[in-house]
Image (cartoon, rainbow, N blue to C red; front, side, top):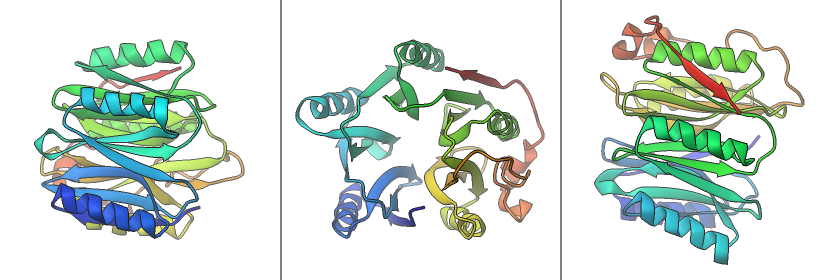
Length: 277
């Protein structure tokens, strides 16, 4: 499995310079997150070729994506919404097909996902910003699924159910009070998530699983109660095997690492929606 690296900047222009420097050192950008005025970049030392683009609106980002379909070999893999209405797209050099959806409501997003599933597209990333749900899709093999909940406790239970059914968590988004997870059937990986009050705490909580071969593939700042971070981790595995409860999903060693606001709703279970394509 690849090794992670991170970069943090309070200025978007400086963030771009840091990314360019890291890319020149052989690292690949796989995702970004925005929180409290800071941009965070997530890298792996893989052999892929990655890049990025910024846009002032979801419509402008859509145009950039479509331009890459015509003139470049880069495909959108991750989207983040940040300060001053900036939409930040991460791209990977790939000859595979790419698609997107832009919805003005969560209900419309669900409809878009179903329609694109029917056409053979698989959901790989969801981002919420400025009242818009932006979905990213690829022509990747395997079954696709998603789950949503309105609190951490329900999302935890939904993730357990998905993992027990043979799906792996590959992406997480928190927006408009909704916890949203994207799942994929992939026998080559095992996945789960960890949480932390701060980004540094998130990374520290993930270290114990890093020793077991897990790496971060996505993280998200949660504007909930006092705020917090959730990171998706995965490791390569030869086949899907039964895993212990500690990995369904990943549990942090110290429950106090969940901030009090999240802990208050940890067992406040309600309705959970999860659908398969």
